[in-house]
Length: 213
Image (cartoon, rainbow, N blue to C red; front, side, top):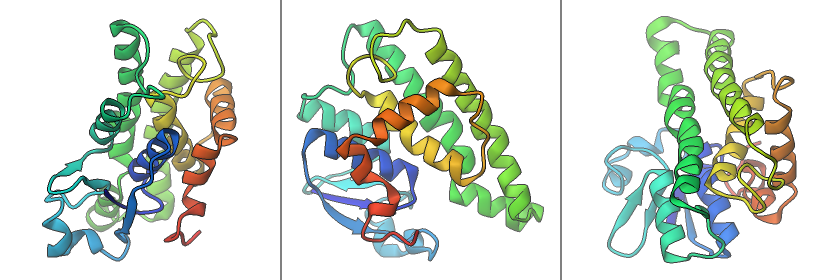
């Protein structure tokens, strides 16, 4: 397997966590988003969207981080990323999708570059945009966590799930853009607990071979 990613991509960060939790190693291929590697014809042949992550599983390429993580969970069931009842799994998916579908697209590099080029936003304007939308999304995550009975140290129980896999990279992005997390104690606590696990710690952007941090 070959995983195409970029150290700072929160979507690729999710996949690195997932592979580490499953104890599986994938060959890594680095796509430098800042230099525009994703626009090259060679990478567009891998993923026509020009986005990371992409996972080559031998003649077939899987894209979109949540799809890759669910494929990983189906092919390597333990530990489960989506445990419990059908309702439990739906709640975990919904939490993950708040991050992957509602928050993350608004902080995507191509969106931020468009704000700069088409609307003349400087770095302060871009950060204000990110603070608004990341902050709103994580506030919703905090409210969901606050409404749950405490069943364990992670988002949905005693083990990390797809929700935690999405939350940790999103907090990394929030910190990058200066989002105020003071009013989100549950988000901060889960992030801290997860970050102490080797699978999460080893997937951190600063630990990647292509890191520029």
